[in-house]
Length: 191
Image 1 (cartoon, rainbow, N blue to C red):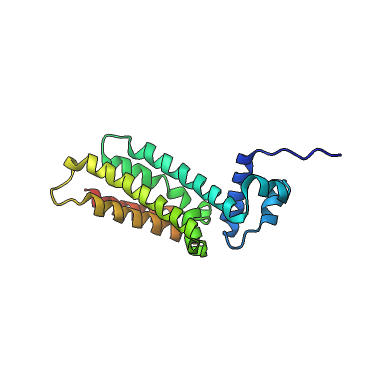
Image 2 (cartoon, rainbow, N blue to C red):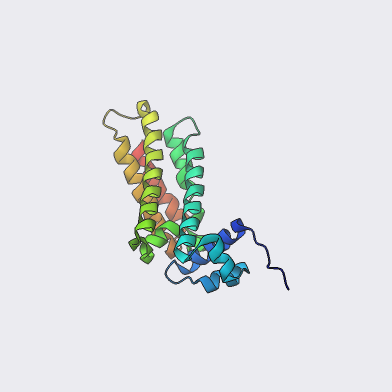
């Protein structure tokens, strides 16, 4: 009897992420994921559960990586302005040109209709709130760098709106110079 092929769950999650990202949650099938990952459907079910449970694991992992990167970048640097600018400009390759056409898995999921599912919607909301809170915390920590009228929370919310907007527009593969020009305008909030 042939021994079942072993698999690395991390590899399967990466493959599943690519399928979900390319096809969208609604259009992606477990058949496509099993074909791409090379594991049998029963093994996939045993390791991750159904399609929704697998997607939630993929989405959580995606969010964790972005939040960890944001925490690292936003906590570094001599000023909030420099840290936020570095964080935002790091997204230029992902929201412009050919690489940008994938957009953001989280934003795509919300647009795909998968956010109608409560668990998915809660995760996306939690992710967006976490990023906004990181921005707000950094702006509050450097409050002395801004005028008395400066609103850290309102500014953090506006920066998040710009970030999310750029990720929505990424599907159109805008020119990187245009994205940078948008970010330059956004940075004027911090002057």
